[in-house]
Image: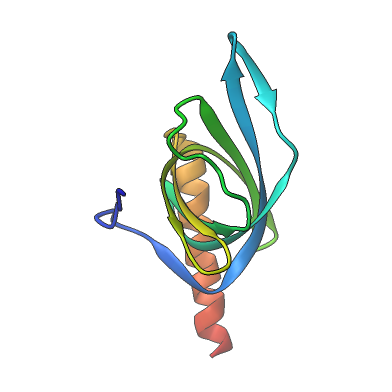
Length: 124
């Protein structure tokens, strides 16, 4: 298992954020898309997501890409990345995903997380 805890900015949610994902599988130079799966985002950084799902995804497959969609501060975020690790809990699976390095996406995530965090502090 690989954990990237040295990133400069990672936000852990007190209540997970709901999202969805689709797997894209590379086969014969084509991408095959799966049905949508539900997820709960546990923490988020500009370059990665830690999430929980009931689905058992084979993390060892190198031909899988994830397309993750979620909303933070009423802004829809689309995150494309690759599974890095998986851990099984009593009722579900926890995954780590790294992004493919979209700088605009990273900037959007930082901006929305700062705003989200400020709103949480103001509500306290």
